[in-house]
Image 1 (cartoon, protein in one colour):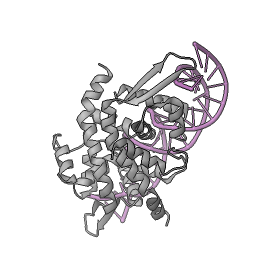
Image 2 (tube, chains in turn orange, blue, yellow, green):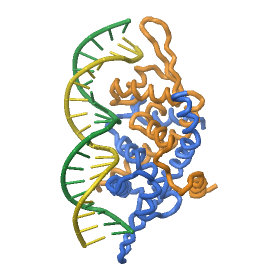
Image 3 (cartoon, chains in turn blue, orange, purple, red):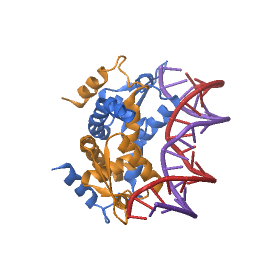
Image 4 (cartoon, chains in turn red, green, yellow, purple):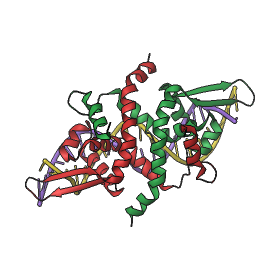
Length: 126
Length: 126
DNA sequence: CAGAATCCCATACGATACTG
DNA sequence: CAGTATCGTATGGGATTCTG
């Protein structure tokens, strides 16, 4: 099926052929496409990660935002948190099966953006 | 290739196996995954749209944000703007070929989110 | 090591009014 | 119809400090 038809089918599920404002999908979409949500999900797509690893991989993220992002994604059932009762503490984060589904769609998107970012910004101020 | 390998390959392009902070892709990613960027791109994936159509489809968007989003996406070379010199004014927005590439990856993601949003929010406060 | 708590700010975003 | 201009606000996000 063409991309165009896919969208049409997608939007036909709604009454007026719109993306409704009062819709749960808006919230989930905001979580998933949040500034750090994308990077965290992509980082976890590779393999389970510890807190410290995620901080290094998603370069620039603050502790506050990492905590907040992980909690949101955990609430959404996309990320699984597993704390090991050891000292020093060790906590592993991984994708749930639902999270894997999503990551499978998210990663190619991120890859495309990374691949084309340079030519895009070059065009900007060219 | 597996999703995992895809990410690994993706991140291997960088030195320290991280998503670098000072990277053009961060900016482009923010544009594309912005609150309204996703919906506008998806709306245009179906067919060219006029200003008023976009306002109705991306329900809840303000005029200010529609203008800003369209300008950003146009600067990024993802959206093409074509103004017709008629009265009343008519302006058509469409995806560039680069925009179509991106939309092809974005639409399945949006479709997945819409399909799973209900079960996700149900889990939230279940 | 893996966070929680607090303070603070920039800006993304919304509402309204106006225009060619 | 397709915008621009202005104002106001909510919150996403950063820096710092503290803790089991």
